[in-house]
Length: 375
Image (tube, rainbow, N blue to C red; front, side):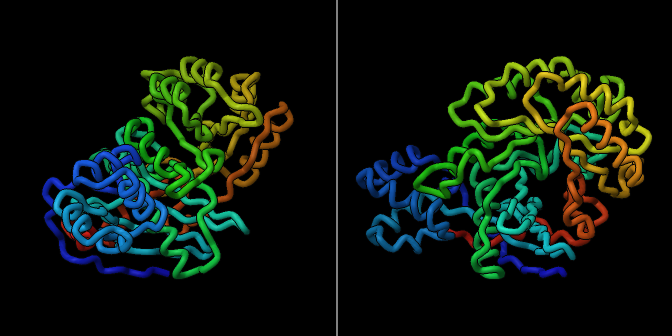
C-alpha cells in the first residue's frame, strides 16, 4: 500500500535557528538572549522534544511576546512526509523531504510489542559498499541533528494516527548514510533523543551501525553516551572485504577488530556484527570458520543478513540451503548467530535497499517541503 502525502509549498527561512537541532543548554541560552529566564528555555525544549510540536505558536504556556520574538530568530523545522509505503509484513517505509528538498527514507518495523525504527543520518552515502543501493546515490550532505530526531517524531505521530497504542521502542541508525561520517550531528541527536526532558529513550534501546571508521569508533568509546554498537563486517578476510567494502582498504579487519577489542563495552552488552551473505562471495563454510576465528574473544553476536536484491549490484542471494549451512557452521563453532528475516523487501525497505534508484520516479519534486513551523 502506498499513501502519498502532498507537502506544502517551499518556504524561505533564511538564517533562522532550528529549535529541533539545539541542545537544552543552547535552547536556554537562546531564551536568555531574548530576555527570558532559564525556565522558559526549558519550556521551549519540552515543547519541541517532549510534545513534538511543529510550530512556535503551539507553545501555549509561553507569553505571546516571547513567542513573537522567538519566531523572529528561530523555527521548528519539520520533515515533509512525502510518501508512506506499507509492506505485506506490516513494515512501513517513510519517504521524507528536508527543508532544502532532499529526500531521505526511514523504516518502521513492528515485531509484536516491539517497534523498531531505522533512521538515516545522511542524504545518500559516501562509503560505497558495493552491495548497498544507497551507496549508488553518492553523498549529498549530512543531516542536521534536527533532521535526524524529526524522523522519530514523524514516526511517532504517524503511529499515533494509524495504530494508537503502538510506539517506537527501539532505534537503529542503519538507514541511509554512515553515522560516524556525520559524527557530531549523530552524537547531538543521541543526546537529544535520550534526554529526560525530551523523548527520553534509553541508550540501551538505540543502536549505531558503522562500516568501520576506526578513529571515530575510538572517539565514540570515549563519550559519556554509549549506544549499542553494530559493525558492518560482511567478509572474513581483507581480500573479500576490500572488494565489497572499499573502506577496508583504509581500515582493514585487523585495525577494525583491534578498535572493537579496545571499545569500553558495558556489562551484559555485546557488539553486533552484521554479515550480509552474498552468494559465491562470502558464504562458504571456510568463510564461517574464518569468521569464528576472527571474532573469538569478543563479546558479540552475529546477524546474518541474506542479501536483499536490487538492480544496481551484481550479487545474488544465497540459496536457503547455503544460508542454513553457513549459520549452522557458525553455531557449531560456538558463535552466537542469528538469521535476520528480511522485512519490507517488497517495498525496498529491507537492509541495503533504501533509496533504490529504481524508485526515483516516486520521489516528490525537489524544492517542496512543509510550511515553516515557527512562523
